[in-house]
Length: 324
Ligand code: GH3
Ligand code: MG
Ligand code: MG
Ligand code: MG
Image (cartoon, rainbow, N blue to C red; front, side, top):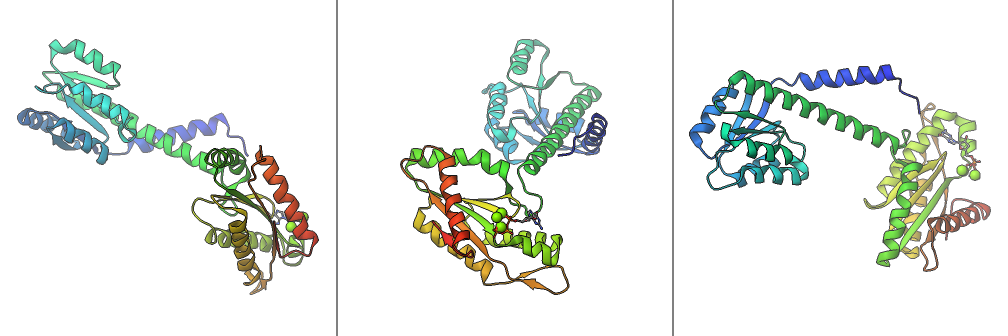
């Protein structure tokens, strides 16, 4: 993978910050038991933001979870409810874990505010409220939240790229290697079957040599599509390298795996592959080796080894077949 220079990272961060900045109006949720106080607070904020108000703490939690708010502003004025409970509940729920909370408190409530900050409240404002100060505090929290959202999105894209094969969109070997031990351990502990298919294209060199490398790539992409259409959502298909693919089939014994493998082999052999060279299409076949978890298996490697031996046997005995 290409190394990213410090300068590029700086520029990326700058772009991120700018796009986080350009949000315009923010979506705010005011939580205040006192309807009139909530309306006053809303008037302070509404010129620059979209503002909803809610008076019940339980309704507030629901709104925070289900709404798409940038910041929640909680008044300490509840008579029958600890406003900090709402804050800790929000911190305990994944959807609202990082949602900014600003506390609106009375000057005598310093201890409550301190406890709130300990519980994950992000900021506070004391009554009587100053409009400009409050707006500045809200803006800061909204900006920080949007920036973090963007960073998280960009990070998950990076992670996804690291485990995806860019040619076919299937998982790559790195992903399979990290997940096979998990599937293996789960199958062993639940005493459930697990099967593995190793698939290798037959005489793939000939396809490259005859039609060119781009045509070979077309075949690999087309094959990935056919593979995906013939397995379940819980199956794990990956391009293991070159023109070799591996499929892990949880909850699938050897007999069922053979049926799946035969279906995949058939879908390749029965329909020629379209390639970009003229209007040409090319006949492709694959060989598949199968192995299924056995009681004496103590590692993923043993399973791989048996599937590999079966694949070798499929090649040796004439290709375009399933062995195992
Ligand atoms: P067989 O497996 O049936 O024994 O024959 P084969 O010709 O497929 O054998 P081998 O595994 O030795 O060759 C695989 C070829 O696949 C060699 C390589 O040039 C080609 N190949 C590997 N990766 C890619 C790729 O990403 N794109 C293309 N177009 N070709 C690839
Ligand atoms: Mg080979
Ligand atoms: Mg091959
Ligand atoms: Mg090969």
